[in-house]
Amino acid sequence: MENISEICIPSKGWGFITLPLIKKMNHMKTMKYILASALCLLVSTACSGNKKIEGNMNGAEKNAEAKAVAKESGKLLVVFFSHAGDNYAVGNIEVGNTKIVADYISEITGADQFEIVTHKYDGMAYRPLCDLAKKEQQNGELPEFEGSIDNLGDYDTIFIGGPVWWGTYPQVMFTFFKRYDLNGKTLIPFTTHEGSGLGSCVDDVRKAYPQANVLDGFSMYGHDVRTHKSTVVKWLKGIGFGE
Image 1 (tube, helix red, strand yellow):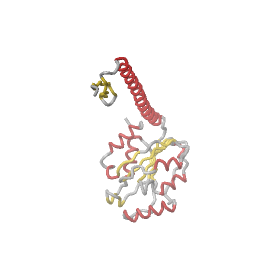
Image 2: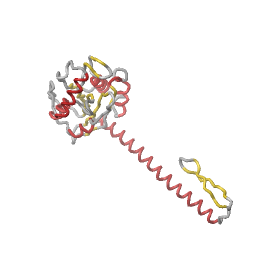
Image 3: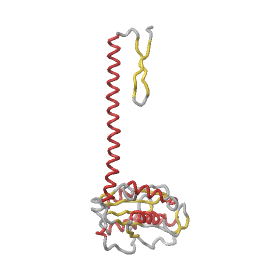
Image 4: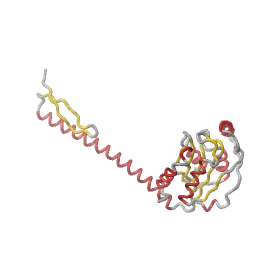
């Protein structure tokens, strides 16, 4: 049996690769083997390095774009629906979770507010409300809401917020989407939830307004909104709003 020795070649991310060499191998063949292995390593390292740079550039460009949007945002508006009363995880509350987040946004950015108000759900317990919300969604209902926005043209950037009911915004918000044309504006979705995240809210806003600049959304647990204002501050800073 031929005697076996080993040689170690540096390998990115793995320390060293141990390669078996047969002692009786011709010296010239051994050197060619080492050089070829080193060349492969350099090519591999260069490729992975390029990928990392590309990823960093994309992140930087995305952050710069968000800050540019904030810098040129013009007048701001927060449009939101919020449900007070019986809520999952927080019980019976006087101020809805989404309104608290909307108030944070207005406080930090100076944005005006328009609250989508309907009394259809007043006094409803959590479970019956869930059943009603599901029925509204299945039937494509568009509940009416109070009030109107007469100066919508004054606003360039609009935050759009609500709770997540059955995977998306409550149907009353789709009534708003149908009534008001927000195409051409910058739209920033946000939600409060207890496990649904953003659901399909961002996609639904994009479907409603295909000519709008819809930014990535923000979601927050409803049971955190009263004690985690810093989370909203951090999000807003990340998209260029606030110090």
